[in-house]
Amino acid sequence: MKKTFLVLLMSLLLRAENYTNSIGMEFVKIPSGSFMMGRDAFFEDGGDDELPLHRVEVESFAMMTTEVTQAQWVAAMGSNPSNFKGRANPVEQVSFDDIERFVSKLNQREGTHTYRLPTEEEWEYAARAGGTTTYLCGDDENCIDAIAWYYKNSGERTHPVAQKRPSLLGCLCT
Image: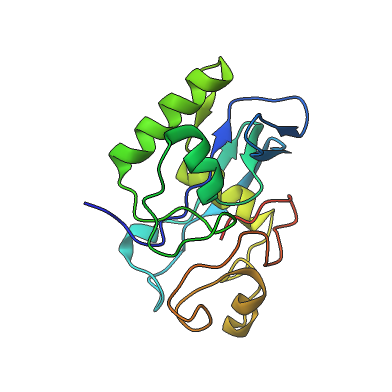
């Protein structure tokens, strides 16, 4: 099944520094640390899959600074499945199987085996950057416009990457 607006962020196993690969994918080092993940009570914007609140330890890794662009996808895969065309737009209309093929081709191209998708814990840690607010940008829902394209501000289409404010750890992980 194809997914629209799939956010595809890549991560690398441990890297000592920030890094840009051969097709322009930029990665920033995310330091080891811990954070509280989940919620301590059922809340309106989530469900019981957010329970219970628990401490998560995260080892250092590298996270891509933006979503995978259509140009980067084409460089690795040779074609563009996206509906909302634009070299700097994030790739969309890809399935999990498509992503697994992309990761495999990227690892082959770069001569490594370290490219992968971030875990849920890694993604949230990088996005929250130590924050404990309801939203990644604060407790007021109105702050979301500054960090993400979503149904209220996107015009129901994708937009070029790197147009919103990154997390304090340097990635656009929203």
